[in-house]
Structure formats: structure tokens, C-alpha cells
Length: 212
Image 1 (cartoon, rainbow, N blue to C red):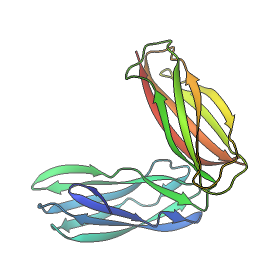
Image 2 (image 1 turned 30 degrees about the vertical axis):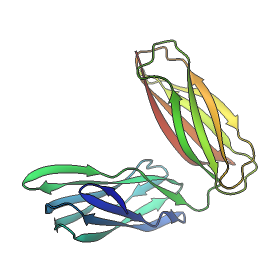
Image 3 (image 1 turned 90 degrees about the vertical axis):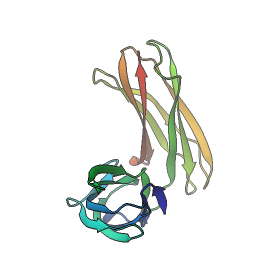
Image 4 (image 1 turned 180 degrees about the vertical axis):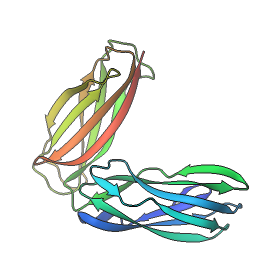
């Protein structure tokens, strides 16, 4: 189980077939205070790939040391990440809690996007070229995938940075590809990497660069 105080958490299963499925969230109060009035939600990082049905679950009381299993129904199309969020009360004061992203694989994907990283210092200057790197890990033997880099500018333009055809990958083999962006506007630039297998999107990652 993962730990983010005052809760241990676990999401199962982490590999599911496509379609409408059930996922289980296990929560354990490892703190010393009683948690009450907890509105528990399972949230999708990418609702196109996987959406969560319903309005969440309610836990009235979770004493120190207690565990609770909650079930959530999802509609799964592609692999993505989910996270658990909770709004409740602790010692008479409201609190908000979120888990880190939890990857959930749909079917047997050919590869995964391990990371997307901008090679720059915080708050880079305008018109300074920035390299972004995407690292891919093979999950099965594949003859090659398509990797696309895109960026959204502060004014809302959606621009293609690069399209790459990857090399053939073996299981657990990692490879890194890069693209470049030169910010022309002050503000937040959102960079996306999309990984496709025969036209089907199997992964997406996001990075942020604030230029000034």
C-alpha cells in the first residue's frame, strides 16, 4: 500500500481489460485522529482514456487503525493514471487529501511513457530554445511506435513540435527522444507527448514551462 499521511491507500487491480470495470480503493487510517464525514472520489487524469462513474463514496467515520474498502466503476478505453481525493473532517477542522497518480493499464500495451521532462531552469527567458525529452519503456516486443510532441501557448495556440517514429523495442527496453520549443510569449506553456501504436493512442504525458 502507498502512504500519504494520515492514510495508507491502495487501488486494485492495476491492469484491466477495456470496457466497464470495477476498481477497489482500500483506505487505512494510520494517524492518531479520527476522520469523519469523508467524501471519497476516484479521479481520472485523462477522462478520454478512462472515466469514473458516479459521485463518489461517503465514509462517515474512520477511526485510527481502521480500514475501509470502496468500489468504483470505470469505463476504460486506454491506459492512464487515476488518483484518490478526499474531503472530510479531522478534529473539527476540514481537510483535503489527494494521493499521487496511480497508473492503470488497459489490456496489454506495447509500451509506456515513463516521463516527459523539460531540460531548463525555472522561468526560462523568452526566445530561448528548450529541449524536452520523453522516455519510453517497451512492455512487449514492438516494431516501432509513433511519438508526437505538442505545446499549448499562453494565448491558447496548439502547436506541433515534432513527430518521431521510434525504434523497435523489446520488453523493459528504454529509449529517450527529444523535441525543442522556443517560447515567444510570457506565461505558461503546456507540453504534451502522445504515444501511438498503429494509430491508437496508448499513453500521454504532460510537462509545464513558465517563460518570462
